[in-house]
Length: 586
Image (tube, rainbow, N blue to C red; front, side, top):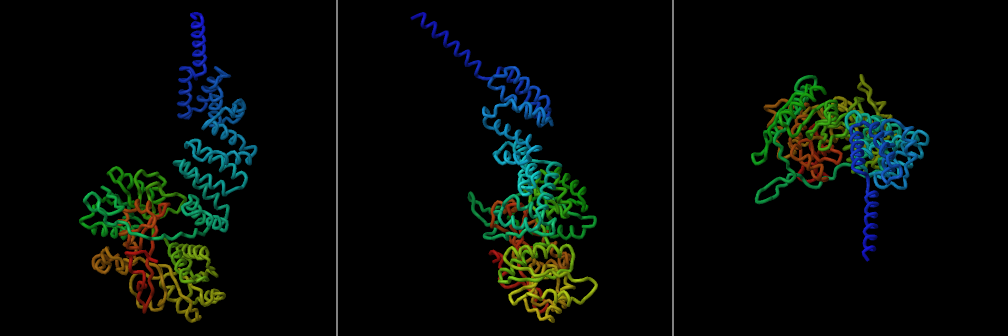
């Protein structure tokens, strides 16, 4: 019995010794592996590759050797040594790999296949899981983008690059954004519009497609907001009353061009913002406000932002110019930004920030939607030819045709003449009794065009962009009787809860003139401050603003639903059904 006991003990020790051998790397090997990982993280890929290769050579048949060879191969690839990668990867047994190691193995196979067989590389990329750590996810998306591009599959390439957008920073992200835009533009307008109709609302491709279409002189049809309930509803919490969605900032910075070429516009927006700011009810928190001059330049904007951040601002409102907004977004601001324009680029609003602007294209979108609601299925368009008018006309065409309408022609009125008979004759064929007319022209041109339309016996209803009305009464506007256009309710004292325009005219000249809409825009910027983040998270919610009912979509764009106005006896008058802004406009 004693000898049996000794034998069993000896066997147990041998088994334990064997388990210790099979349990894993030695402390020295663990330390070397940690060193290799540190070298890799620091960007010393060659050093990491050598360290892992040495670890593999110490015990070629060991359980960890296969993993070490894989990591060495990966490090050589990232170091720009595909030949060494190929040689080392051939010694790796892929069947013994699991989890992220298996993903890394297949990713390397795809990356090495890219140059010789893009089809194989694309097939491997398609099999890789989407949910990966950022470094691997970025490489997987880049592999798919490069393989698809090599095969001429521009749509797949663009989708892969959109996945890369959130994984990149700085100049690399800027270059990727340009690549997305350029890749989508190769598809052309018809293909982009057709593809857009197949995508669900909120698809991350849609904003990029919109920017590509803009570059091509077109646009995406918009999904107009479905407004259901106002923000700011007073609710009881813990024995106190609070406004739903209200966020109290301690300090806000207003960045506007108060000098330079945009000084007049900047001052109009500033006066509107300050008017609403000082009109804040005593029961509502009012943040400390600092105003900074951007000088209307990107450099001035970035300097003003740095001042605001150093002074302790929690939110930045502004800047106003497109280039300035683009520069600020491109700088990856750490503070949330309520930008007062849309950058004319492929830069998306940073997380937590939104864009708000008075966009000429929105008039065309609103006019198309209204005509379709009234059963109008064919339309002709007249424009005077400026860039803003072309944008409005293009947005009208896209929206109208997406809704089943047919834009028969877009006529550009010649400059230097008052006779538009030829353009009107060209527009008449095919315009039936259920047709409509959209005009995007300034007041002076509209007052020449409308009598000639009537002489030509065109009786179809006429809709216009907001520029048809300068914002103040004019006896000559009798020539525009019957013309409908979307506008800001505050200009007509049609929005309760805001300082009345009529009472402000006595002390603020900008309120009476062409700057009135910019003044209203400034008031809305102040109204949005405590609510814009909540609005983005609650689709269907809105605030009743000076320029319309304001909501925020998932992409961070403030959507504005205006009221409709019509000329009657030369007077611009809000139409029945658009004055009650406490409920959604139907």
